[in-house]
Image (tube, rainbow, N blue to C red; front, side, top):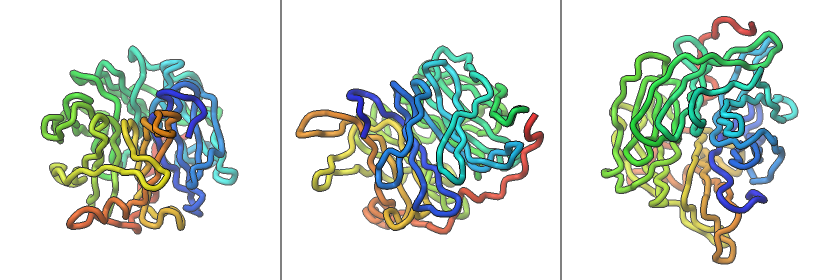
Length: 336
């Protein structure tokens, strides 16, 4: 839960600890102040006052001159830029490693997701605007072991967009055009050919927000979308033509309220200690209830089995597929 009232939180990301998954962390953007870092019990363990951050994503093994580190990128509306952070593998603390203000040409940055290529090993950030514009930036290590970026692709959609997610293994990028549908692109910086996965009329929802992936072996798994005004989440098969697989809601239990008005979502298919033995879904709760009144927003953590077991037949539970350890090729260049 955040201290500030109102529309504050937006998008979570999950960082999986390299040796002890119980020490994994949740990153969450604060649209008024910076980046929150939480443990798996929901305790805040760090806050970075980095500006008005909107969306955040994580990738592993970025090549610095002193060795590899895991990084996160966030859309920064204070400076209309991309902020890049790296985590110390020993202390678990994050710091800003942006080589400069990586300023976007967009009218105002909004949504963001990351992609690492299985073809080249290169790291990318895709950032978008409310006007439907998309920029793709290639990240590289600068001479002082900070992270810089170069713009490598631009394209546009017709309507407002925010939520996006890239599938490194399959090479696809999914973008939610909020009041139209979900589009599927190639994530490599090539021509923006696309296919419509689902439109809002079929989902009976006027607004699609966050996107996340549940990854399993052989390219199986699910694409999940938050349907903000319906307080529901839609599932599509990760493979093939992304066939629609159903919907679910997250209801209240005891003194924990139901999830409503969700923006960002994130998933880990890996077990994260004893608290989440079958994987973890993290969702933004935009209508947190306090004695019947809307109060401070928070995140809700749900063990994947609580969702998978409610479907007939049950959804996939694959706790052995380690997406963190995909065999990426070594990116060319390194520090410059």
